[in-house]
Image (cartoon, rainbow, N blue to C red):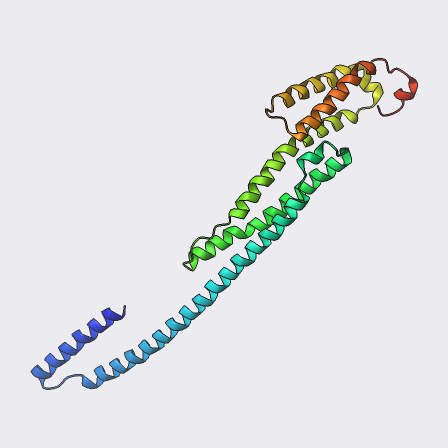
Length: 233
């Protein structure tokens, strides 16, 4: 706006000179006071703008520090993730309890990662506000994809074990007359595992469990003793 103000001053001074030539007197004192006030205000405005610029630089530096801190947090999480995430080759060797623990650990890592990623939106917004380039976090993208892959794999295990546990909640007396439900469960899962495409250590592990149950299934119809009738099958 300063150039516009200077133009107005020039117009006012031109009119003042015209007034002097026509009326023999002008508003020199008023113009001088107005010019003095403007010069003082202009100095204050320049000083204020300089302080604002300095503060903006401080805030930009703070945002950059937050970005650097976020990257370090991601790197620390990445180290823990690659150390603690379930290993494909270990799935075949782990017992049920170990697999359950691995699944719980995966959920904890997901929750931790989601909490870390809440900062991304704020960082992007701050960069946009302070005129900084939008930050990119390739490590975050890599981690998100890896975690999602693990969740997809282990969701199959969770689905299988949850369905099996549901069957286990029934007492033997009630269940032995409906063994076809268990047979249908095994057939359904055998088909599902075969349709998943390329076998993975986890699908191989689940298929072995299904095969083991299918081998034992024909024997269940011979289990009629009262000992089994009074206990959870």
